[in-house]
Amino acid sequence: MKHRWVAVIAVLVLGGFACAKSGNGPISASGTIEAVEVTVNAKTGGTVTRLAVAEGSEVKKGDQLALVDSSTLEIQLKQAQANVEAAEAQSRLAQRGYRTEDVQQAEANFAFARAELERAETLFPLHSITQKQYDDAKARFTVAQKAYEKMKAGLLPEERDTARARARLAHAQADQIRKMIRDAEITAPVDGVVTQKSAEEGDDVLPNAQLFRISRLNTVYLMIYVNEVELASVKLGQEANVFIDAFPGKPFKGRVTYISPVAEFTPKNVQTKDDRTKLVFGVKVEVPNADYSLKPGMPADAELIGA
Image (cartoon, rainbow, N blue to C red; front, side):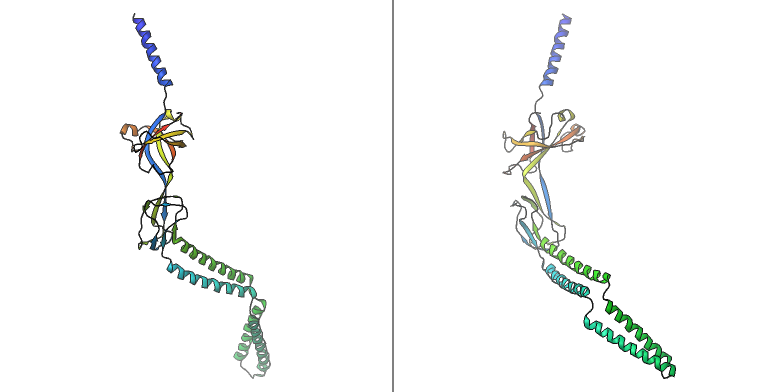
């Protein structure tokens, strides 16, 4: 009789183990709805002259969000454009070389200095002029000769290159100011909903100051955590049902788009300290949210289908 009870117990234990082994259900986990958020900063400083959106506004990529005063930049652009014109004129002059009249003037000066030197060379041996007068005539001849030779040869290639480079620099400086003027119009970098506005009309903002936060609510995601045993049943692209308290019994369809390759300790927002010391793998479930029913911060439950 004793052996018969042992056998019955063994059968029950083995049977129970088999049920647990073959009765694996879907993987369920909880988390918080999140969305991709984009921070929009001021690219140029100044006074906010217009706000085109409010918190909760739906925007498309390229929509105007705000305007920053650019009147000072407009003045700077006029100055830069004047510099461009001057630099281009200098570049054209350098490519053409010296003016004909300047060359003729240098040639005339050289001819006069040569005649003066020849006269000094005739008079000096006769002691009709002093040594200083002779040396001065010779020096004037040398200076005039060098000036005429320079004019006749024209500018050096390096001088022409320098003039062209200065013109390009002037253009670049003007383009930079034009970009700053364009940046004074703050536009939406992505489609989404304005979930934070950090400035008002009349505020003075600095470059890189945060002005808006745009959340991409058309697709949200839920990060859940599974243990090593459950991880074997999770696949990329796997379908999932997501549930929130606001719509009990209504599943929101999603799919697995990311599986962490590295184990980590359960995040601190898990309720019990014991659970936080367990090693788990993060699994990201993306959920289409065309009607914006799901909002960041909502607690949600995910059930992986086919796990």
